[in-house]
Length: 361
Image (cartoon, rainbow, N blue to C red; front, side):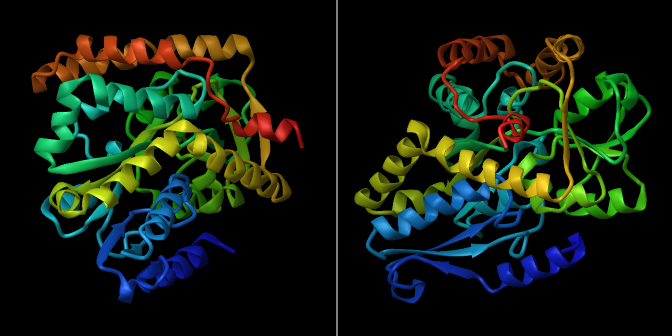
């Protein structure tokens, strides 16, 4: 299926307002809208669907969920305000789309500091618990309850044409998301900000030479490999923290037993369910990608080290100087909390990168 057909079918499916939970939404005591800017097959959507389906099930049908996928209720960039203001009850937030509104959260966005995506999830959880300004940004400024931290697994460098070294991306036009633009520019590429839904046609028309900052699962789900089949592991670690939130007033209106179900589900995700869900999804998508012509490759260890040196610590220092300081955030203090959390969880992760899975096929 070509990307344009995929979008058409996804939009129709989302617009219908998929209903979850037993008994049905019509019989639920509490009806909640979940409003996502990405499709139901995008990376974090697999985790979101598990959480929400379990919430409906474990509440014995007292909570019903109505899903709005692929921006069918609010457009990209509108979801944070929609939950804050109560026009949506729950949503997935990718902080890179809200750079002015989430300056503290952006202190969690970086590459080349960790190895595994499930480790990054726990780091975000711990920093949220231990750095008060981060909690205040969500709970007070945006009037939101953080249900759980999630992320976009791994983001290979996706190229239309093969490259032989990282030097080959110099001058290439590459779609960037959030701090992925820092990586592209550090390596000599031309970063092109672009919403996810526009990327396939931009690759097809040759507007883009490649894509970075687009997680592996979503890249395959959005059929980017039809145009750009070369997927490179550059040693950057996990990609893009994200967070699933609920309007705080809605949260406070839930009975205590339903709040506890949400807390228990989040604890299960942090306790290993997140990795379990993603490991299966990643394996399925790697098999699909290989069958459909994706070529997996990796930089040498030497080039990975050189690439890391070009990006870090410059990327974190840039956030401290250009984002944290102007917004009155003690950036150094936050990054000290981040480093403690990274040290605590390093080596505990189990989520393989796509190239590792492909090597085992």
